[in-house]
Image (cartoon, rainbow, N blue to C red; front, side, top):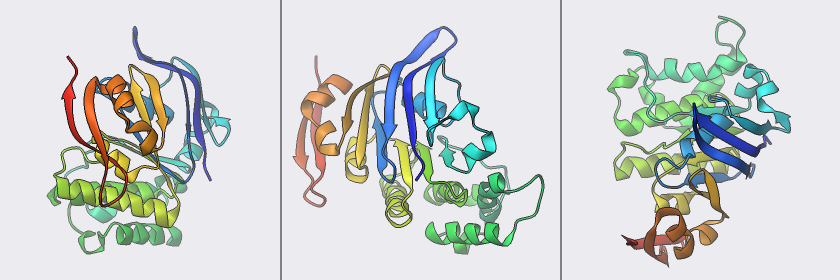
Length: 261
């Protein structure tokens, strides 16, 4: 199972340092949610660890090898990333979008092989998109469109899937739809999932592990019970919270909060 970790990672843009001396390990086979206030470095860390942004210093290890010394195609066979609010070209069908996930497994402009088509069919089935495969992506609802992008990512056939705010711009029903899909992919297929998410209760409900960040540093990393704690949330978000056990899931849930003045 693919492993991903960072050691003494420092990340910045031009003269501004966003993250400094970060050590971070993701547990294979689990769902990890990265939480924290806006501008704390969540998306930056995700992009850097997926090799979409270059770190100022430090090391990222994919299966024990430094990721920047690993060929891009080899990385793409182990790690897939879905950025925030991706856009597809006008008229591109669901099937065509999902087929892009097979690119790392192809040579040049070769045609899809039998296994490629099997993986595309599997991804459409898992995400409930088989009946929509010939429909243009830009005509889908928000939830359907996000499922199509997730289908493309899982068709890539990687052990590790990273998502940057996968529920952004979705209503509550579609947020739940997407998160339950990711949960099912994790449980049934054993994929490691790392996601940046804003909703603390959703993070608590769906993730095995939470990483709470502030100013580019880890304040707390652990289970929902360890991170969804009034003391931790006060330090991370500067809010006074009341936490109870969700009567449906037993997981910690925030039922009220207020700014600390």
